[in-house]
Image (cartoon, rainbow, N blue to C red; front, side, top):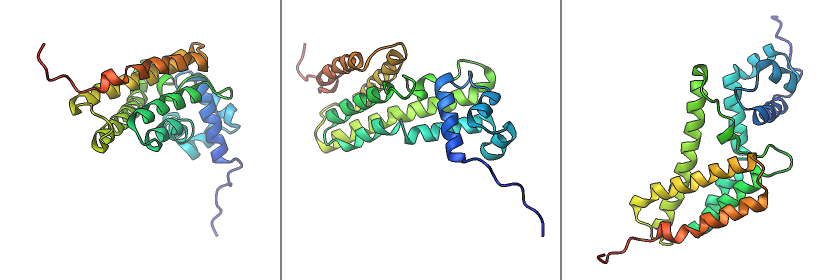
Length: 208
């Protein structure tokens, strides 16, 4: 009978979580394969055998991030009955996640991206696609609000509103990375929600 390769001596789920922590701390470009091997407690060859290349591993890390730290803001969009409450909850959930004491103070989706090396273009586009997905999720929730009748914004305005609140999410992450506290982020959220009525109101039909 043919002999099989040696069984793994590590837990892939644990190793993936360790890789997530390192990528989150250092970003994609700041993390080397040797750094990953040390953090995960396995040889580089085992990384390739189990997860593929560094790029492959990062994509798996981002999938894990999406189902853990990235989940509360997305869930908030669906759990609240009104659109305004859903957007407000999404912003607050984002602020909660990026100021946790047990994790780096920023959204990995926004600030772990490569900064420009040509060989990292595929990862840049991968993360850009994920960020576009976030904007689409916000826009879909706005469209649902229009369909449900609790939002009066004209359909043509939904893209701009979605871009605005997605930009607020991204800005919260930058502020948190630079030291803003949860209370300071809450003040930003209050300002963003103060714009809600203006952004979502139907344009006046009266002449100037």
